[in-house]
Length: 284
Image (cartoon, rainbow, N blue to C red):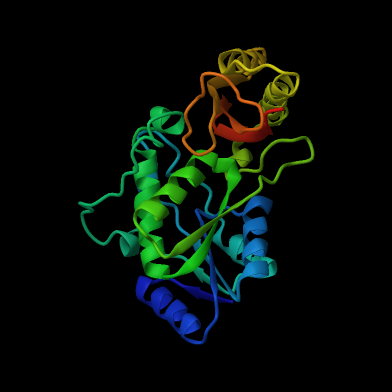
């Protein structure tokens, strides 16, 4: 496994790979790898000839007062895990390598970024789409793998790639969970013991919302309120939002229609971290 730290090295390496007729699977991450990330690497290894992992804690997607400085950066361990999971090349740029001067350009996706995470973190998605565009431009034509845990991000990146004709196929991969249902996240390391147990309420609330839909409830506001009440009953959890949305538009429908699919999305703060989770549900 090769570890490269400059944009030119990474670009040239992947250009050489493609010149040999080999396909590239790109897995963009901020490091602190867990089983969710490793599942993306394995999916890329299954589909593509060469797996390219990027590890970069992107300052543009952190707002004021967020955990940029404290974000975990266990690079040596990440590299060991990446190699075991099938990565062939890892790109580990510094901030100055990615942003060598004042950045005057950003990439903005309208509408899909105005609600949920976009409402709670107004600058977040512009930071995500800007850095992902840079990574796509550096990496070149490839398949790019993203986890469904950050479902709104996945929808935004898909739309960006389509709207800008980026030569990248976006592949969404299922959420990987702990045995008690908690979605794996790099921020789970922030949870104290009692908080870790309390965090399971997020998945329980989502499953309760899914059960309401499966039982015939068609009013999204009723489902959202029920999910919210479950979070609010947990003293260590503070609800940010609970939403029932169309998985493509990310808009909340007036009522659920039989034969369609909706996505239940939820964010709650437990202790220090904001924890995201979601669940797709087929409407009977």
